[in-house]
Image 1 (cartoon, one colour):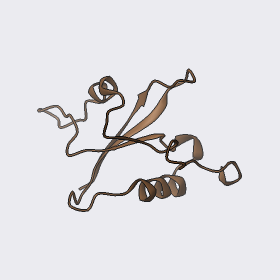
Image 2: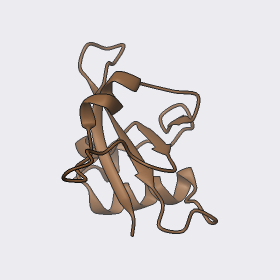
Image 3: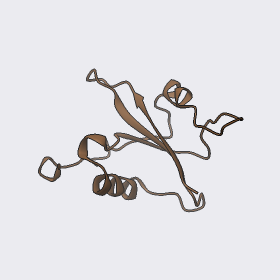
Image 4: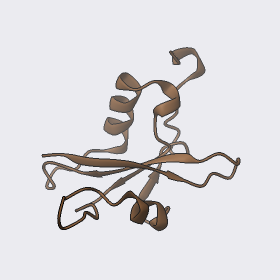
Length: 98
């Protein structure tokens, strides 16, 4: 089962950027940045496409309810494992925005 959580990270422009943390269903075949970007672009409005993506082994959860503790993800911010899709040139073209 795939698990994912989105959280805000501070932006240099003043507003927050979106970071998505993903735990792949098949850890032996993790998704690529391009595959994830294409999925986001095809299934989300352009303003919801995350700038940052992090593929992880697990998400921090509560013991009792197994809910993701997003405040811990926000506190981590950007790490050395975080992909910056914008820096990789993966942005939604202005003409393709819907």
